[in-house]
Length: 392
Image: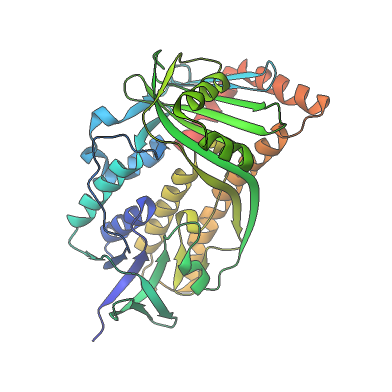
C-alpha cells in the first residue's frame, strides 16, 4: 500500500510550509516535500527580508509560527514616505489611520525556521526531505507522486509551492504568461548613521542613463535598513560590481542621504523582475500557491503576502469541502475564484505604477506627481488605502 494523503505540498518555503500547517489544522493528512534541508539561522543578517502585513501576521500567529520569532529581529513599520520623481510626495502613517502599524519587517531565514518548527510539532504532517518529485501520474481519486528516491505516494491534491520556476506547474500543464520587466531587484542590508524611526522610504526616479528606478529603504531593528533597488538589469550589474565604499555611496545618493552614512553588512545580490499571470492556478488534482501561482513587481512589497492570502483561501475551501475530495475541480475552482480578484488587482496596481513612472513625457510626470501630492492631503482616503493594502 502506498502512503495516502489528502494533500501533498511540494516546496517547504515560507508559503509551502504555511500551506502544510493550514491544511493540517483544517484536519487534512498532509505530506510536505522539500529538496533542501533547512539550516538554523545564524547571527548575521539575512539578505532576504519581507514586509509582513498585519493580515499575514494574523495567519502566522494562528499557525503557531509568529510567537517563535525573536522579537529583537522584527521591526515594526509605523510610517511610509513615498517620493515621486519631481515634487510628488505621499505619507502613509499608522497613527493617522488609527492602526498599530503598517507592517513588520523580518528576515526570511528566521520566519522559515519558525514555520518549520511549527511543522515539526504538527502530528498530521509527514515531511520528506531531502526529496524531489520525479514524476506525477495524475488521476482520480488520487494522483501517484514518485519521489527521486523511488518512494511512491498517493494524494487527492498536489499543491505546487515550488516557486516562480515551478516544476509542478509544468507537470500539471498549467500555462503561464510571463512578461519580463527587464529589471533586477538589488538587495543588501546596511548599518545607518541616523535612526529610521520605524519609517520605510521609497523613491521613484529616473537616473542619468534613463533607467526607471524604484529605491526602497526598509527599516530593520536598530540603526539598520534593508535596500530593494529595482533598476535596469545592466545598471544592477554595475552596482554589484562596485566595491563596498562606492556601492554605499551610490545607495546613499539614491536615498538622498536620508539615513546618513551607510555601512554595508551583507553583500549585495540581485534577482530578475517579471510579471507572471495564469489563466487559472488549478486543474483537477492540482493547485498552485505563492510564486508558482503569480508574480508581481516588488514595488509594493506584497509578493509574499499574496502567497499567504492563497494559504488562507485554500485552507478555508478545503476545510469546508464536505464530502468532496480535495482534488475535485469544482472545489478547487472555488479557491481560484477567491484569489482571482486580489491577485489581479495587485498585479494591475503594481504594473500600472511601474509603467506610469516609466513615462518621461512632461504631462505624465506632472500627473503622477500632482496626483501623489493631492492624495497626500486626503486623510480619509489614505486611511482607506492603508486598510485595503495592509489589512485585507
